[in-house]
Length: 157
Image (cartoon, rainbow, N blue to C red; front, side, top):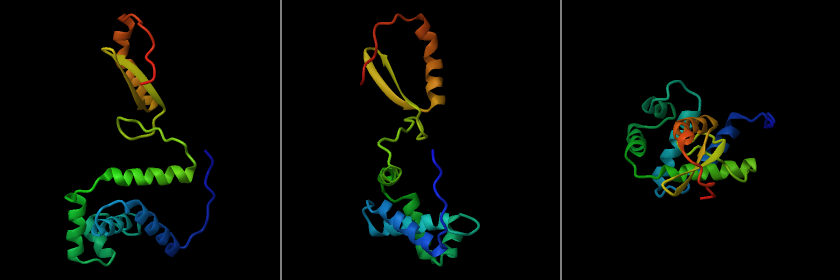
């Protein structure tokens, strides 16, 4: 993988880029307050400062106690679909990187190395796994595979 070229960007310009990126990512959230709270939370995590606890972070960003309650509710109780954010981010990142596909380990979200196909009781399965998880699956099946008869090849599911 080639290394991205280093460029100098002012703090103000970097903040503008961060805000634009987060606004793009949270555009699918249904309520304006959710979108504003998401932006504030990400700024608090990324911008300078010490502790990343919510209350000190919001105070550092010049917010008041009412905003703390709003962001706290957004993080803890708000009915929003995290999948919307993950999907928006993945679509943006894959487009920026020029990727045609992004293989993700189905068991934990890390990068996958391969798709593993197997069959049980006449049903074919396919799962995307990291190299470590694929080896673990093969080790787990190996005692039964050594004793079993091969009955064919599992095709594409």
